[in-house]
Length: 115
Length: 115
Image (cartoon, rainbow over all chains, first blue to last red; front, side, top):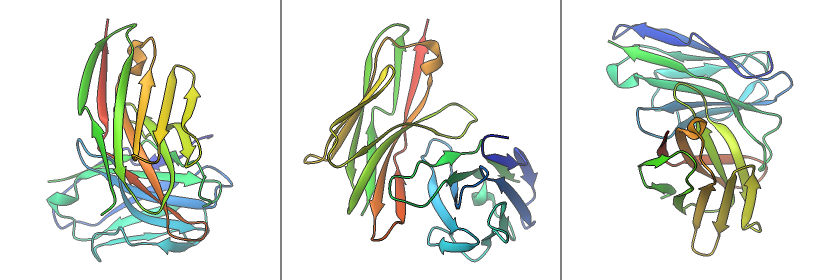
């Protein structure tokens, strides 16, 4: 496809469970970003990859959150021991490069609900 | 602290009317300012990107302005259409050196266009 895709579109889980959220960036985009958006709020930065490496993970709220991008394309955001406060829409974006005027293209998001 | 504030929080207008959304920011070091449109259940889509030296930029019926001295921006929508109903998010990019930017998102203005 031409755009950023994210799966699943919706995920409902129970408190304490482990979840994985997947992001497929636009082909050829080297930079990939994860954001979290709570209801009525703007997206908050979580982590940014340049290629395979995490260039900036300062937005990850705690060590229950982890993300990987092993081949420099698809990325997975992993959340351990989920808590109700983790409920949010998780957005992924990609850009051709990480240059200062790069345009980030967003996916539709994964809505995570922790019961 | 880097912050982006938007007003109003929400706005209802009649189809065909014009409207202006406001954004104030305290972000340093400033790199560029972007306006995004986010439809319900979708990821944000970029409307405009403006650098420090640009004070206006148009994209169809959308016109963004930037006053870097007062750290204010506005998004003017002309001849509104029902499809303009969405959240409009002001995003300021901070550059901490090198090519990497960090995006700071506002909470958005929720626009409803009624027939």
